[in-house]
Image (cartoon, rainbow, N blue to C red):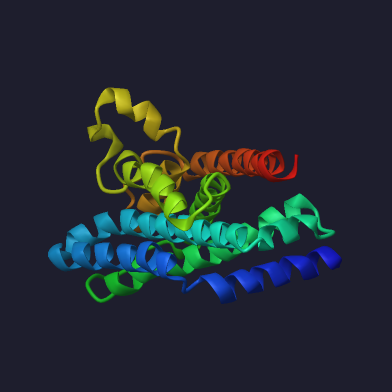
Length: 243
């Protein structure tokens, strides 16, 4: 019970204090929103369905990683993260609470492109249930990747800069807007080493049936990425801030 109370209070504090911080607004809200509107306005109806999986994935990626960069770095500068580490809760609970707020933010971000796309095209053919779980897995893996980077930075601008080193390449490597089959051969193995590739592929299947992998296989790989990233994040926090 005490762990759940701590979990809820950490989550509530993050949502209240960090959702509307300027760095999060610029990278986590304005950038995905402006990119989405630009693509939707300039594309004809049929192309919107092709773009939608990539727009959803991009919105989740930038929303979650920006939120983690803001949360961790502001708490480090204010010494509040150290107080959390001294609290009588497990490190697993702390990590789960930290990424939960960003997952919620990512889920909200994901459906902004869907909302705007609904004004241009009919989305009745979309498989909503599976698409939701795909978005959830993208949000979780992206949050863990963001946490892995954020714990290595001391200032918000450092965390955002480090994040951009992998966020922008992932826009092109993960099949969001450029099919992986059209990438140079030497880059394709890199694409399949990134969790976003599998989440975006599931969304393609649920929105316009253009997936290249089995959704079951993609979900299984995303679960493996989730476990591995969680263990690495936990170890990284333990090594950098506890030992």
